[in-house]
Length: 190
Image (tube, rainbow, N blue to C red; front, side, top):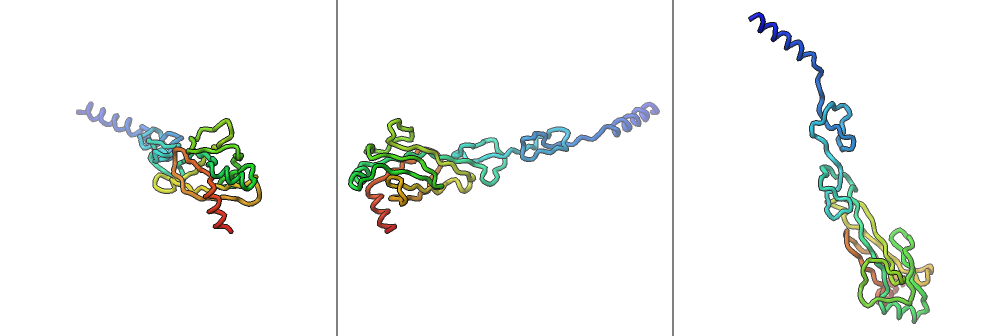
């Protein structure tokens, strides 16, 4: 009996001296990293985008913060035949195209037109202009963007055409400049 009590007493003293350990997330890349944790208890959470349509979709994300999703859409600008006829009638050599932010995209001369919408691959002959729209948002909201584009005759001071549209992520957005579009826009601004 004395031996049993002695073993019990030694066990109590021995185990009470063992240092306590603190569990938590030990991954420094995790959203909830805990520097004080001695061991990883499996509680790590990772930030990312929940939206499968986003460029940076992360199926393993646990937390989505504001504007954590990045979206994009390819864009091709081109002239329809009616726009080229309009250009020739009005002595316009080319149209210069600008985006939302007033950034110059490029120009297309009256030498080129398309009878059906082209794809978003750059054309080496200069008959189209291609770019990519990029924006941020979330899987539950803001996954669309507002986009404005303008066309200036011979890169002059006044646009012959301006349009604001909503775009969704992915795919190819084909933006045609047409004579009717130019005429309708001029009626609105005159």
